[in-house]
Image 1 (spheres, rainbow, N blue to C red):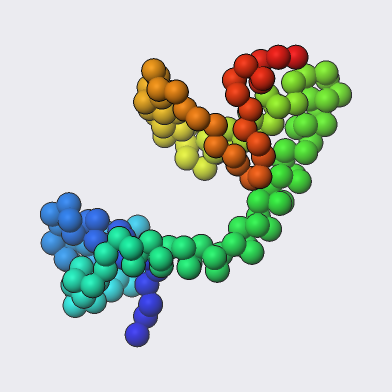
Image 2: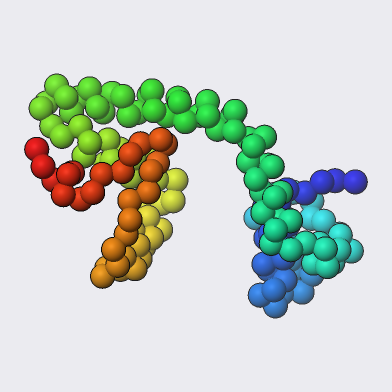
Length: 152
């Protein structure tokens, strides 16, 4: 029996909830994931037994298994991309933080594509307008209030 990832299961259940027939869900799985689709019986079982908590736990477990590979890829990305950008900025007397973030945004844009990146960024800016967002620590860094970031 083939095991399917949480991503495939989530896709199947979302497509079914959107009103598609099981055959259409199978076709979508074949097309989207380039794999053999699960049986209708299996997907019906997922529909009956899977809830958000169970699927969330599956996603976390799959993520834990992928972490070493993702960590290596992230380190290669930083070593090959970010560090040279920061050295160039330093040598040119440019703002290191700005150049680092510009590099980060370019990585995200390459993953999403320009159209999605711009749409998501625009939506983010629209949603946060008028809303005070509290800084959230990322990667163990202490967030700075806006005023502190503006000071030289």
